Amino acid sequence: MKTKFIPVFALVAVLAACTHEPPKSVTPPPPPEPEAAAAPVAPQVQQVAIPASTPTQAEFVAHIVSDHVFFAYDSSMLDGAAMATLDSQIAWAQAHPQVKFTIEGHTDERGTREYNLALGQRRAVAAQAYMVAHGVRADRVNTLSYGKERPEDGGSNEAAWAHNRRAVSIIVQ
Amino acid sequence: MNIKIKSMLYCGAFSLYAAQICAQPLPTQGAAPVVEKPLDVDVSGSSNKAIVIAVPAFAAQNTVATKAGSSAELGKQIAAVIAGDLSYSGVFAPKGPMGLPEVSAAQVASPDYSAWSAQGASALLQGFVRADDSGNIVVGCYLYDVLAGSELRRAGFSFVAKGWRRAAHKCADMAFGKMTGEGGFFDSRIIYVAESGSKTHRIKRLAIMDSDGANHQFLTNGQAMVLTPHLTPDQRSIVYMSYQGNRGRIFILDLVGNTQKLVFDTPNLTIAPRVSPDNQWVLFAMSVGGNTNLYRISVNGGEPQQLTKTAGINVGGSYSPDGSKIAFESDRSGSQQIYVMNADGSALHRISFAGGRYATPAWSPNGEWIAFTKIAGSFQIGVFNSDGGNERILTQSWGDEAPNWSPNSRYLAFFRTQEGSGKAQIWSIDLTGANLRRINTPLDGSDPAWGPLLP
Image (cartoon, rainbow over the protein chains, first blue to last red):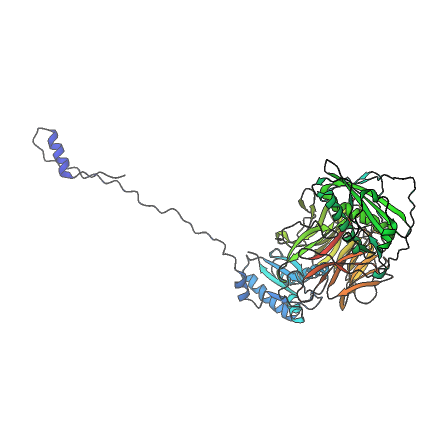
C-alpha cells in the first residue's frame, strides 16, 4: 500500500487555514511512518534429496568392460571372459544402487525357433544368476529372451554367429 | 480323419472369417443310378502319372449380376480356382478352363465323353453356377470318369457371393477325395508370420490366408514381434507369442470379436502355445530359473499344470489327434530329441534315436505320423511313426524348419530360410517327398500353421 507522504509545510498550511488564531508553534507531528512496504519474503525452500537421473546405456558401457557377454554354441556357460565382464558390470551396479537392468538373451540363427527362445532365456538367466550371486539384488535384474530373432550381426558365418550368441545387460530407463 | 461333404442339406453354422457355405442336394436327373467306380489312381506323386482332368468353365444356368461378378464370369473363375487346386495337389494335370470348349448348362449333367476323351482327358470336372435374386449362389460340380463314361460323384453348394472361392475349393476337395480316397484339404486356411525388414530389424506380423494364398489378411500391425501362431481346432481363435510390453508372453486372439487376451499372466517367459484337439487346454512352455518345461492351462484360466519337470529345455508340444498324447522336444539326453508322453505328463519316453537332432514335432491329423525338423548338417523335414519307426526325409536345405500338416495328413507346410539374407518363405511338400512348391505370400513368411477343413 502506498503511503501518501504529506510534506510538513503543506500540513502546517492546512492547519493554519483551518483556524483564525495565530499559528501556534506546533511541533509538527513526525511524518507518518511510511507503511513498511511488504518486504518480498522468499518462499520457504527446503532442500530435499531427489533421485539422480538414470544413467544412460552409454555411460554404463563407458565404465565397464562391456555390456555383452558371449557364449559357445548351444551353451549357456559363462567362461572366464564372461565372468570378468560381469564382474565389471556388478561393480558398477553396486555403485549405482538405484539402477535396474534387463538382461536380454540371444542365440545365433542355426537352430529351431522355439528351442532358441529357451536357450536365449537360459543365457540371460546365467548372467542374471551370476550377478545375484555376487550381491546384486534379485529384484534389480529382469531377463528376456529373443532367441534368434534379433541378431546384431547379419552375417551367416562363424564370426557373426559367435557375436550373436550373447547376453546383453540393458539399463531400464 | 477324413471329412467328406455329404450331398444332403447341411449348413456350416460356423462362418467367421469365411463365408458361410451350405451343401445343396443336386437333382438326380434321369433314371440311371449313379455308378461309382473307383479309378486306378497312383498317388505315388510322380508327375507323369498325374491324372489328366478337364476343368471347363462352369456353365451359368442364368445370367445374373452378383456381388462377385456376372454368373458367367464366376463360372470361369470357379473353374480356374479348381484347376489351380488340382494342379497344386500333384495328383492331377488339369486342362483348362482356358482353351476348352464351352459347356452349356444342359450338357453339365450329360457330358460328351468321346469329345473329352479326344482332348486327352481321362477325367472331367464340370458344373454350373446359378444365382438367385437374394444374392445367393448355387454351384453344382460333377466328376466324371471319361474313359469309363460314367459319373463318379456330384456335389452342390450354396453361398453368398463372396464365398465363391470356398465353393470352388469344396468342388476340388470332392474331386480329390473321390479320386484318391483321401480327405480333402483345399477348403482350409493357413495362419503364418509375415516377415519384412532387414535381417537385424525384422518386422513380423500375424497373417491368415486361404490354402492357395487368396484372401490374405494381416492380423497385427508389426509393432510388437509375434511368433509361432496356431489356429484353435474350432478355428475361432489364434494362439501366439508376442513381445508386446517388452515381455515374451502368449496370447489368444479371438477372430470374431478381434479381441486379444493374455493366456497366463506371469513374469516368466512363456512360449510355444498350442490348443488341445478338444479345445479345452492351452499347452505351452514356460521358463523358470532358466529351465523351460511344458505346462497346460485351461482355456478358462486358472493355474497351469506342469507336465515336464527337468532342468533343461522342453518345448514344442504337439497333441495327438485324439488329445491323449503329446509329442515334444527335449534336450534332457544332451541334444534335442523327440519324446512322447500322455497328455497328463505320464509315460514319457523318447522316440528319436537315429543320429542328429530332432525338433518341432507335429502329429498328423490322422494320427499316423509325426513330422519333425532334423538337424544333421543341413536342416531336414522328415516324418516317422509315433514310435519313431519308418523315418523318411522329405526335403532339406540350409534352413528348412517347422513342418505343419494339411487337414488330410498328406501335405506339409514349412518354412525355408535362405543362407545369408535370412529371408524366409513358406513352402509345402507332400508325404511322398514330391510336389515341393512355394506358397506365395505378399511378403516373406515363416511359422506356417495349417488349419482344419472349413465346415
